[in-house]
Length: 417
Image 1: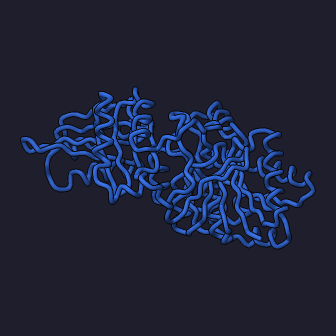
Image 2 (image 1 turned 120 degrees about the vertical axis):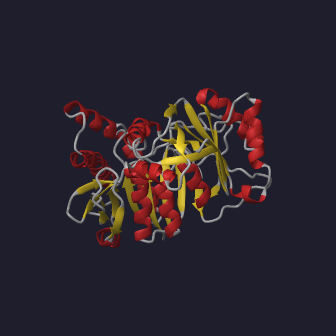
Image 3 (image 1 turned 135 degrees about the vertical axis):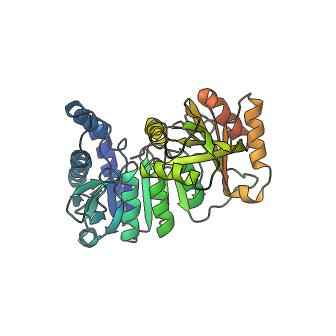
């Protein structure tokens, strides 16, 4: 007998028929002799619908009230799924995040897990029950309901698996596993049998939508065996683990892209110690994440530099830059949109020279200019114009030997929450 945590995203429980299918899947696991803890997201478009309703009433609703509102979506899911399991003749119990023992900090909409007391979950398992937990939520030490932000249900599942020492944490979604790239872009993308935590973490940070970075970080830190698989079939999924077996001759494991990119350039900044610390410190104080940073040469005592940030943060970043112009004088600032960050990831890149050069060559042969570059031991990222996304991803996928013989993809958009 093994202890499984099974997480089902919103598309997997999007309607009554799918809810019944998930209930049967859970019961099958139970009948095989295993203990089951299930983490569930809100049904289908429930969260988006709730957000739309809130904004009809208040264009800038208070974060506390949004958390109070949005957590109801998961509560609907867990109660209905529990009813579906009971209908199949098995005992189940549903819990909210705080009933399951999730203690978070006090940051509404982007709370971090501080601690988990799984005593109630363990007691229910000991009583032979299937435990169904609402993802994406917890409560602070002041008793306030909080949500974990984007990818919160994945994080709930992995964190709970670590707390109860589950044998496996299965993330069920609407595709068969993790692919070498987005199979909606490249039809011959291959499903990976396994991938390392580090590779998956890079892919998640770089735009791959199958797992949220926080969930992968939690799995890596706590050595949680993570499996991504489809909720619509019984095919073998992809295992995320400490070290994955590298396929012979394959150096790059995956290709990710991120459309949520804006480039901001500040021209004529004084070339003085502490200037960059001030600039990026101000952006950090405004909770604006900065990604790639490139500084050009110094001329006449001033320098130009550019950086990327999320497209959604572009306007705020420009406002912050304008606010410190008296403190850090500069000639002018500009921004650019219509960009993508495309990245190759692979643990084998460490010991194989020329991987980046091949990427640059493939992109240049398509007549595309590279605007910015960032590297690490296992990834290379390039910022380019987004109008040839499909061509670039497909060409890189072929160049690094990732194509399958035939189209294998069946499914829809991967489930983030």
